[in-house]
Amino acid sequence: MMKWIKIIFTLTMLSFFSNAKALGYCEDTGVSENADGVITFTGVESSMGDCAFAPDEYTIKIYKMALCTSAPTRPTTTDTYDISSCVDVIVSPEGQDVNLAAGSEITLSGVTRPANGSYSYGYLLMANTFGIKAKKQFTNTMHTFQDGATGNYCWTLDSSAYDSQSNGAGWENPSPLAECGGAGGTAGIYNATLDQFDVGQYTAGPISVTGGTLSADLITDANGLLVTAITTADRLFGVQTFTTPIIVTTDSSLFTVSFGVNQASSIWMTDEGAANEYDVYAIGSGPFSTFMTVE
Image 1 (cartoon, helix red, strand yellow):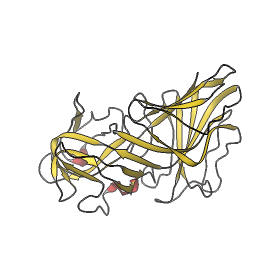
Image 2 (cartoon, helix red, strand yellow):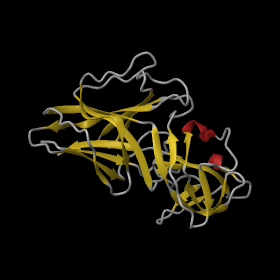
Image 3 (cartoon, rainbow, N blue to C red):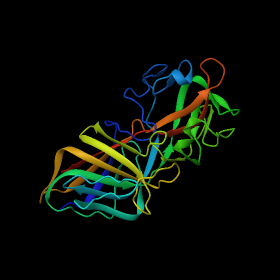
Image 4 (cartoon, rainbow, N blue to C red):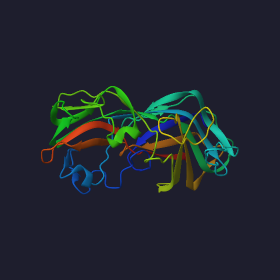
């Protein structure tokens, strides 16, 4: 019988979540990353390509996970999602916190074995706030926005903010979300709330990923409807279509969900004024992905 679920950190997949960065990680116009993970920025920030990297820790909260025989209907602003073809694998009303640290394997509680059968879809209901802990080294001189400490390292602080604040409007001085300085700096947990995928965009996908396609919608727990304004969502509803259906048989004993977080953080920054120096406001959330298998 299927008895448990592992959440396994992996570095193989990309996805679409907030401020999602293009393929190439930090290898694009005006940005590069060496073999040791040290980043170099060159030129004006607005002309740079994309740069995203793996945080040291990435915490999510899972409420439900299920397998489905037909595609769940995504929510709209007037109708909630339809999951009538799905069977729950995890139900956790209070949510289970999962820290996706490199190499970790975590056993979750509240697991139900799905009936034998073929499942071509899966869905995940989770909180839209992500706990990010990261410290990154640069060849550039980086400044704590706007008049704070400087150095070749920047790290997250114990703090919270919405991703819609990444456009620079209303940034506090100095930043309460990140700090730059020397190698001795200690990272805290920055709780980043995904409240839009892009300006005014509360739904994303489907897009192609390893093993199928993914879509996501920002909703509220109160009514399950798609939100229409920033700072209003408190849940993320994600659906995966599997290229190869998941087959559950009498011999199945392990349901594995892999999360790829190799691009799960990115820098919020502006030009400092001096050439190739930058003001850093936050190390915010970037994309992650999921992939489900049964053994």
